[in-house]
Length: 285
Length: 317
Image (cartoon, rainbow over all chains, first blue to last red; front, side, top):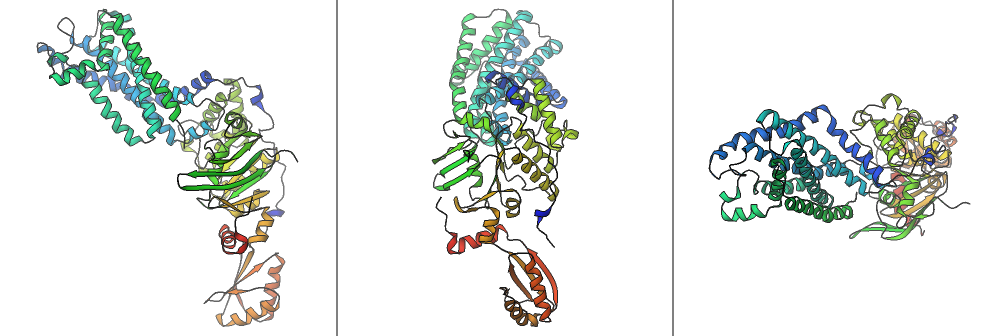
């Protein structure tokens, strides 16, 4: 039989840690410190051994596939991108760098959707922090993943496919940075879409729909001169083609300042448009 | 009395056509535990989300420690901690990493963050599981970590949205003890629950919500006296004895209710000594008791009472 619980003895209760207010001794928290803390959080899942291995294999598969399958085109006059004066692999790697980095950037959209499904983002929204730091951290974490893959591309290409461009190590490092910038700025398109759509299935469909034509209807694998007219027009106007030209220039040691400037400008414009949209659309409910 | 730390005045919230909150008033003083009681869809969580700045009220005002939730969001967020219905911790991180992350976000350096995390883990009995990922925690451990995550910044106001839903009885009592300790230390707690028993045990004051409106408010004792009583359910050995038993109980001053069939009589009781009275009356009438049960009013009883009787209209705030 139930008896009232009121008589149950009162044990002495230890004080809870709200009395001591260690937070009073803590420093101030700002966008930079918050972004660093959150980026580390978002990177952590990428650092598991299994994930690191798969992330490393991805560019390897891409190199094997494209270097193997498309090398045939190199023997066709005017068939491959770049031209006869450049080894096909030296021509292909800069384009693969852009693809790798854009794919890593596109991942940021999925990452944000996963974060939203995880209620920890709700907690962040009830804390006295800048909400934008959550998005910045998301973009940086996936950029870090992109950087890791870009280094893998360069190292694997050099070791396995004889990638030794005339631009040298400096040229390759420059190309990695340009690719990173392109991938990072593109990630804001996907972050903005994730913040607006808040639906992983739709986002994945749109991501595939966007990235495939963007990456393939470009000068990445095949010289646009050999394409049908309609496709050539698209490929020549595709911003990814400009990005490919920029990385190819750096790798080949004949970087064009205008091309680089144009790439940086387009990337900046992308972030300037998409980041505020993401910020405005980002909510948990 | 000092200014209440939580104060909602005439708060309404509409989602399109749906009115989730319909002019709700709640006021919680320092160190007090206030219960928002109601079924799913009553508007409890919506109110908590408004008070914790996750949602904007459609009309009305809400203040936390004097700060307007709609206008001074950042000041409000400095004063509150929220533990939602679903674990708001990062599944992929360990318990300690979750707490240090929050401390870092609030401005602690790595040493301070680590020491705060360890202090909380110790207090909530999670030290042994500190380095395990949350995905391996039991429901009770997860809840305790979730609450400790809300406490990293020493908030003055804590919102607990159904803190014991889905927990086993032992874990539930563990959470209750934490909530009581918090209030002892001056934290104002607003907790939502579907369990009358939980509100009764913890809360100094209860606000009963139904379909977005406050339908009753008071101390647990007031509310229970008002709306529901404990029931004694007597099952007699023989159904034929029912008329005799009813007569004896009525004679003893009780109000027995019978069902259409079966040998069951239920009798509302005010105090536990009434139980003796019932047993004595039935003995004197020479009716044999097969089973005797004692039940507290449930939230359903409260609802039924309030929505079917004249007293059940929404109270004007």
